[in-house]
Image (cartoon, rainbow, N blue to C red; front, top):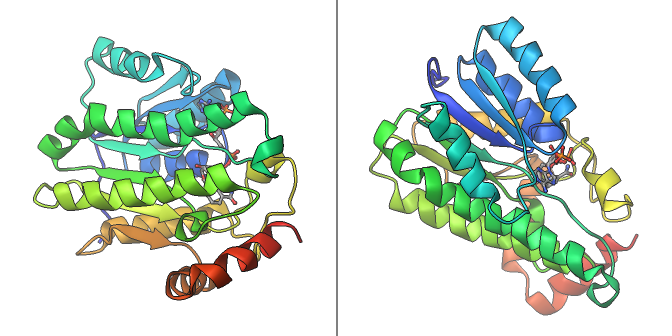
Length: 262
Ligand SMILES: NC(=O)c1ccc[n+]([C@@H]2O[C@H](COP(=O)([O-])OP(=O)(O)OC[C@H]3O[C@@H](n4cnc5c(N)ncnc54)[C@H](OP(=O)(O)O)[C@@H]3O)[C@@H](O)[C@H]2O)c1
């Protein structure tokens, strides 16, 4: 049954485009008030106006670089200043890079780890006590099908997503006695700005899904009687994730490398 979010507050990171904007639309339609975090303020404000008039919810845009030092404290301060209690958190902000690690921009690699891993862990830690106390909300951490095997030519990206999967499944177990629903969303190729940021579609595997299809997979998991600790969007992606786990690494790594450079 669809979980009722009326009157709850949800933080969504990376809400200025793609999957984050779709999560914002979905949770607002279910009655959640929102804190929308990303760097592009104009996009966040436009989405806030759209959702307030469509659903009558309160939406706070928060323009912030989550990879910058002190960013998570700034989110916490923003929430406290407004007297909000956080019921739900969608850690979705993230980006990928393509190419051999030795040739990658070193500062950008660090930024990727700080955003995809650092901010996600710190935000989860910051708001987990009040989310479990509330027991009405959801925690969604966005990983990727890249989480299921090492990914040559996206080595750091794949490793950040393997971290997100492991971390979130463990937190799901730790919080199982609370009413908080926790899942890891592992999308495959999704039609967002992701590959524009990567700078190439060379690393895309399989057909694109829409953000609406992918977010619906997460919502179904969260609405299930027993929420799975992780969920893969798309039947082919789900099958590939299982196969990757069964195959010897000596086979799966060169296969993945070929897929990353086709
Ligand atoms: N699309 C895919 O094929 C795919 C597949 C698997 C997993 N994923 C994962 O899905 C998640 C969402 O990505 P998407 O596909 O929706 O891509 P997207 O359209 O590029 O969205 C990424 C979001 O992250 C935000 N962001 C980037 N850097 C940030 C920073 N330093 N501080 C705060 N916000 C930042 C962006 O906003 P600003 O630029 O305004 O800051 C944007 O809202 C990511 O974690 C990605 O790894 C995507």
